[in-house]
Image 1 (cartoon, rainbow, N blue to C red):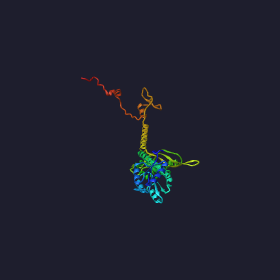
Image 2 (cartoon, rainbow, N blue to C red):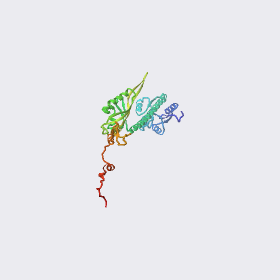
Image 3 (cartoon, rainbow, N blue to C red):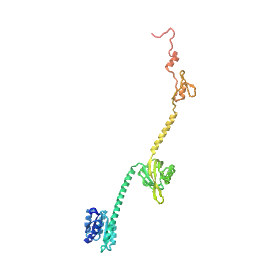
Length: 361
């Protein structure tokens, strides 16, 4: 590792000889070390540079080590600090740890602390790396949770999760329009919300999932609406429930054991759809009944070429009006056309004048 790639460390030490020894020791361990001979200068250098770790001596002019720690804490510094104290200053070292120092080393006259210093620095840097990775993971998790929460809130269907006893451990805000606040439903049994007539069927499906992977697809249940939120005035709604069992795998020799830990799923309100289906079925039934009452004439009808009588299915010859009346909903009213009237009653309609008289001028 060249100097430009080496991890940078700032050493705040007022004793030039001790500072030089610290610098050489850490240089041999592969670190790049800058020196500040008092606390004020050390803070200025820290502000101007990018240091991965600070080695701070307690006894310094201008600002002592503890005061440096207080100022770093006020600036919300994330750089780890290794405190160097004199022999017998263990109480001071505890105070330094309370102010945010990650570790401390007691400076002995023989210089033995220098042998320990690289190990302490390496351990503190490893801890800092783990903390940074943890912070990044937590930030990524928070971002993921916020993104998931945004997606869940945009879904109109109710998303829920139950524990192994059927108690609600999560339910989305989509439940609010039905008269419930999500926080009020936590740890309530889901069966409390199911219509009494549907509870046995719902419980059976939940118990089925405990005995194996039996996902509940297209399970129609009636749910009771609540009265604690801005809910629907209706007492019940019909939902299409799609759920799946959740299992935890325990790896034990000689077999792996799957344990049921709960259920998660989506409940979609299909009340309006069911009403439309009922209306459609009612209309279809009415149409079928109407069609059953309709009588129609079709096919070949045997009719006499002379008298115009029609032969029915039993072989009898009927007047045409009788046949049509019996085989349709038509009704007859009788009258006489002008041609027949003239033929049958012409003498009455056009009387002849008496003999010897004539009309005209």
